[in-house]
Length: 280
Ligand code: PAF
Image (tube, rainbow, N blue to C red; front, side, top):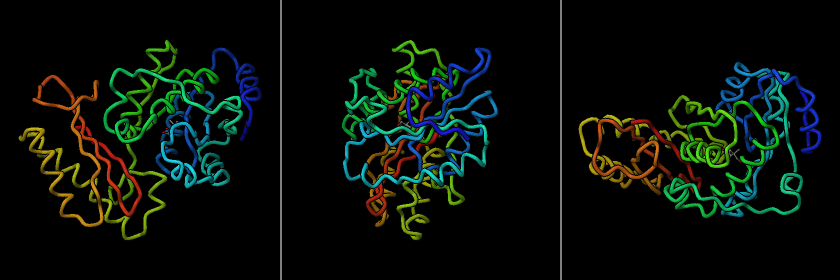
């Protein structure tokens, strides 16, 4: 497996590829798990060459402690990737290399997609995500880039980013991969105790029940029902539950048969922040 540390090495390699080859990009922050492996497997099945970036992007963390705690597991990540395919190209740069010694986020206007939910709770988060994703897309120039639907808001913002910046790439959203309990896979799950990890499956079972209720009840009714479920759960603290239009991410007021909706949730379990979402 090729592992590049600098932009120059990576772009030299990419320039050496035939113009007819399809190139896939899977941006990650490392601490890879089965959810990431599913993105990489899809990318490998659809492209001749796949670049996986492993870079913990400092500008998307509003909380310094969260950044400091972010796991660095490069050796295990490379093992996981080589089990998917030996032909994967890894880009694992330093922050100074990526940001040319000027580590700051650009400012974007994502037309309201970035001010709700994660954007409302995590200052500047999506400016940081936009900055790194734009930089990676510009460097790698992939035909396709793959992102998980667990970060569905991020996925919609990246679609907006490529539209606004006229970046010629197909953005592919991939389904959420879950643990057997139903908990959405995340590198943060490793920080949960065994007991809390099991209890956190309540997040998904509540989303499933909310989906069923949304078939017959109003959005307001469902939101209140979810809030009450969490009031009764001592170990899980609900930060937000929202039901939004899939395209605009604006909260649903009255249901419209012609629109698609999704429920989004953020919950603290023993100080670990977990997010999940479900198509309704
Ligand atoms: O989803 C992530 O892991 C990150 O936000 C991303 C897209 C790799 C950007 O740093």
